[in-house]
Image (tube, rainbow, N blue to C red; front, side, top):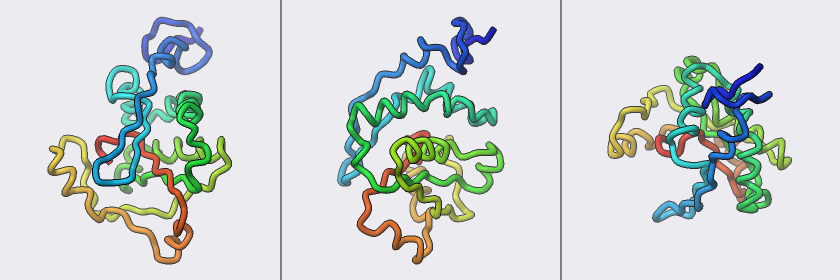
Length: 174
């Protein structure tokens, strides 16, 4: 017998029960001020979603695969399938990748890439001095995120005139 990893109550054959997975309510897209960026999210960072994201600190990759249907639903509800050419997961710093053993954004990006037959771009890197965002104030996070990513000139040509979908597991710290 399997039980839901979150509520520990409902017997299921998957990592999470239908009740917990259906607790996601797709929020209205958020337009970032002074940019053309729109954030689509599976929800607020609390309750069930917080549990899923925090599983990365337990080196548990399964919750991200369990969310695949919800991520695909998000794309279908907002008709995003044709709104991008390339999927770009936000890279993790080497220390973070070693600590967790995986990059949640890359797992999600690969799902999207495969589901919608889009190219995935894995040639973005972080500079070694990237400081973790956890525990920082908004002002410190803003200063911390400047100029932390880089792409080689030859790789950047691939992105020219493309609509890019940037994938991160938590948009409040990236």
